[in-house]
Length: 609
Ligand code: M6R
View 1: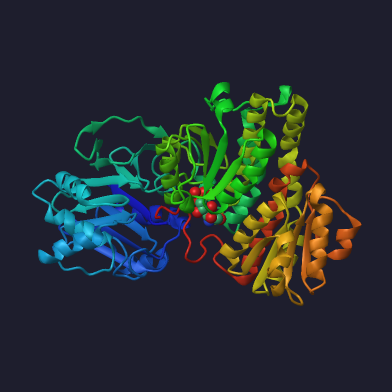
View 2 (view 1 turned 90 degrees about the horizontal axis):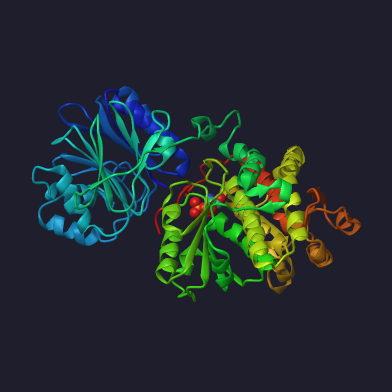
């Protein structure tokens, strides 16, 4: 989603802004722009399309100056266009602002401003903020911003630059992430750490309702009443190289190959190898608190929701506590039954997804205990949850989530073992078996990755089709849903995931000669049933790619092509079976020539509802 960069210091701001925005390209955007103060006036350049289009314009008309702001916009109010791109300004070009989020009351604010003579150039909600701040300016920019945010309803990460006080930048946030990078004789603002990591590792993470006032040599944090706030600096300990492609053609391919490391890092010291046990030290839930949980809700969006579908089956089988899984945007409006004994597990790679955060707040307000599974330390979700389990996948840049999903699965397995041990719903021997099987998963993933060429061939075949079906039962159905989303989002091939036994209740009508079907059959207890369902599509002419752990004769006879994953415990198979299917999507997208890392219309972190 939209990206924000701000700079104040002694260097040329333009190159720092452009470099920062390029690090945020992965978030998804459709226009880009910067404003720089040149000693006399605010100069702005903004263009629809990729950052490269803006850079081309800046080559012939550079913006010189040592303070500036930059933005990549993902359209919400108003189509992608030069006019709607940020930064936005007021009629006197006194203020230039960039904004992530949505101002819900922008129409009423706009009407008031129009009545006072303000003239608007764009269709955006953001332009209203620039006019509003100018209308409230009485010689103190900080106070004008404070007055403005009190009138605004909605979500914002906002950065303000003014020619009236050109020695400072003001940043303020509510429900949209914002960080401040602290340098020497220079300071930075970013919506995400990669934007500024080239220049500093020392950051302040702003909380909701907080503002930062940046000058060259100082950063002051305040609340929106102007009261000072003290905050420890967060030192970023991961490297910029982890956020770069490292020789791979795409971030997605790099991240698929990073999964063995993600599994190892997520298990890390949480597994006590000598005792074959799981120790989730970071959880502070007592035995009594765990025993009091009588229902679990898993709430998430997209791929994280699909990890939750696996999590449900894992937790139910390990603990026998009933688990429901909800899409976050539905959960908060369906009046879910929540009591003090409800554990709500929030799953989010970014920890900033607006729908997920809203669901978290709703559940918390109704008395649930919140356990977050997230990949970003210091994200909003980590700050608002009662308990946090970090997935150590490392920064995930590609819009299509891969290593975040699989490390979420690993975290659910660890949590299942931990709860089962505390509740004594599984014996030591069973948990020891799970732990041993978990520990060999990284090598097994490496084996699957080495078969990429076979998968590529089938991917090139399905890339010629417009519709693909994924089938599975039980855990295989959960994996089918994630595989289908992956294929859709990056190759733009329409696909559907179906519970294999459900196909005959309507969808079978869509199967015709040559329709590609990916059938996942890894669950021993459901194997024969799934094979029967595969026969149903084969009989209608489907072209079937089977995925199994066992080389059963029946399956070999039924399908056109067969892939195997190494043997593991049945309930761990999702952590293996998704790997070839991620590669399948990747190579299908490559064959179709789509923008794999930045698929159309999508954003990495969806910070609007
Ligand atoms: O950051 P989150 O895990 O909260 O994001 C949730 C979804 O937006 C995300 O998983 C999305 O579905 C991915 N693009 C799928 O690959």
